[in-house]
Structures are given as C-alpha cells and as structure tokens.
Image (cartoon, rainbow over all chains, first blue to last red):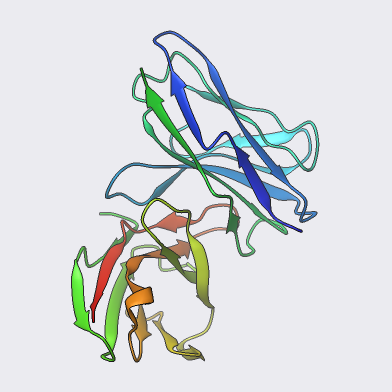
Length: 112
Length: 110
C-alpha cells in the first residue's frame, strides 16, 4: 500500500527540548518537503530535498533541521531555537521538483 | 503583496448549487496551478491541477485558468455536504516551490 507515513500523529514538546518528526514514503519519489500550517493560514515551506544527501531551506527554516540519508526518509527536527513550534506539520513528496506533491497525514505539535 | 490570495470565506451554498472559489497570484511566470481540499484536522488532498489557459473538468469540479489576469478558479457543481471543507489554491512560481493561499472554507447546507 503506497503512501506517505508521518509519525507520531500528536507530539508534545517541553521547553528547551528538541523533537523529531518522522516522514517515510514508499512511492519511490525523489523530492520531499516539509510544511508548517498555522490555524487559518496556508502552508509554509520549511525545507525541501530534491535528492538523497541534499536539501535546501524553504521560507521559514530557522529553528528547524532536516536530513536526507535515504530516499524514503526525510525527518524534521524542531529545535529549541524554534520559539513558536505549535503547528500542524505536513510532509509531502513528489516524483521530482516541479511535479505534483502528495501529502502525509500530518503531525500536530504542541508545547507543554 | 501575498504570493497567492484567496477569498477567505466562509462560503455557504445550498446542496445542489454551484460553489465558486477564486484565487489570484502575483508571479506572472507561474506555470502550474493546483487545488487541494482539506477537511478539518486532515491533510490536503489534490483534487485538480491545471497548466494551460482555459477550463479543465473532472467530474463535478472545473478549474479555470487565465494567466493574463493571473487568476485561477474552481467551480464545484451539484455541491454535496461532503464537499464541505477548506479549499487551498497552490501555485508553482518556480521548479521547487509551491506557494499556498490561506484557503477558502466551503459549507454546503443540506
């Protein structure tokens, strides 16, 4: 069953803590993306990766970090430097940059 | 100026009516345009993509693109209660980036 799997569905972060959101895809897509969605707002691009071992900053990369060691996986770490991390985080993938993007189910992050 | 602007809504239509959603974009070089549907608490799902000027129909959905006016719209015919959702307009101004509007919330009244 092909798709994009994000975990966990809900995540709570304590003050000063780093947390990592998982994103795995079995669609054999080359490109992967991380977006953040705040209530009543559109999606904003955090990071994207076009190929393994390469990634670029999006519009709001400060306070976040990523890695792309495998084609299937693109984890996002929300660091303690991100002062307002509460949001809905969406991972997406596409066959390549410039093609249609498909989304995972999302991770909802809250601050304790 | 926002890259992608949509009517904020909410848009309320009776069941069976046509819902019309509008979207304008700022980058004249944009080549790809998408409509995503997002149910409350869920992730966006692609419902339409359009790349050329004119209309594109898929079932009850019709996307319309006018690049000269930098305008893209979505029509939902014979609206059903299951169409109640937020509709996101997305525009690709370059190869890597997809810019999203804030979305228009549609409520279909039974």
